[in-house]
Every structure is written in structure tokens, then in C-alpha cells.
Amino acid sequence: MGGQRNIEGIEAAVGAAFEQMIPFNRVLGLQIESLDPEAPRLKFEMRPELVGNPVRQILHGGVISATLDVVGGLAIALASLAARPELLTMAQFPNIGTIDLRVDYLRPGRGKYFVATGRVVRLGGRVAVVHMDLVNDLGEQIATGSAAYIVD
Image 1 (cartoon, rainbow, N blue to C red):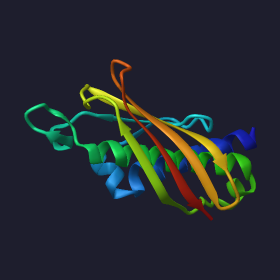
Image 2 (tube, rainbow, N blue to C red):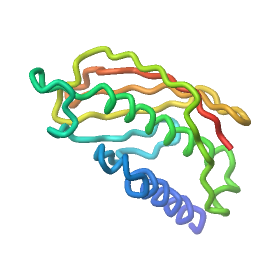
Image 3 (tube, rainbow, N blue to C red):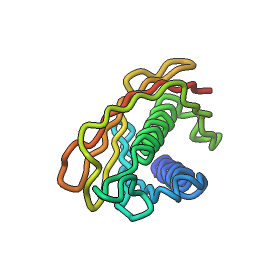
């Protein structure tokens, strides 16, 4: 039971770190939808401040790429904690930095809300690779991404 409480505490800390401690994530309005280490999800609502094309009323491409980058980092943080349980007891999070980010914009960013999912493809000793997806409230795929991160 103590182990479960510890895991819940770590999940709360990860959620607080990604939602509250990183100012840019607050600007984007990112909220944790799932802390599943296999496929964590972030959600955000469409807001006028996030529009990149006022005529078409679609998301700014930078919002899309930033969200995919954040969910990639979240996926690595959770996978690292799952792979190295000793980090749970030390209450440490790995330092994660983006090396390379590729985004494919598939559809205009229309929707009431959007959900980004990250999946770790490889978690090496120093480099991790993640694939990410962004869908709207109708389940339409808006963008995909892949990224490499340095992890220490």
C-alpha cells in the first residue's frame, strides 16, 4: 500500500511539474489527461489566443509543435521513472532536452479541444526517441511528430 501511495505521489508531482511549474505549459493551457507510462496524454482547449490564422480560425503551428514536444518530454519522464524506480525514492526527474523535432501537419487545427499522446520508441542511456500524435475532439488526426531527446 505504501508503494501505491508513493506512485500516486510521484504522479501528482509529475502532473504539477508539467501543468504548473513550466510557465509556457500554463500559457498553452496544457492539462494532464493520462499519466499512463505507455502513452501519456495532454489535453488543451481551443482559445482565441492560440489561433494562428484569424480568417480560418485554426491553431497556430507553433502551438501544435510545442504541445507535441511537451508530450514527448512527458512520455520520456514517465518511461524513465518506470525504468528506474530508484528515482521515485529520490524524487528526481531526469533532465530532458530536445535534440531534434519533426512535425507533420496533416489537417487544419480545428476543434473544441485537442489531445496529444506520446509513445517512447527507444529509451537509451543518453538519448530517447518518441512518436507523438495530436487529435481534435472529433478524433481527427491534426498532426504527428517524432523527436529525439537527450536524457540525463
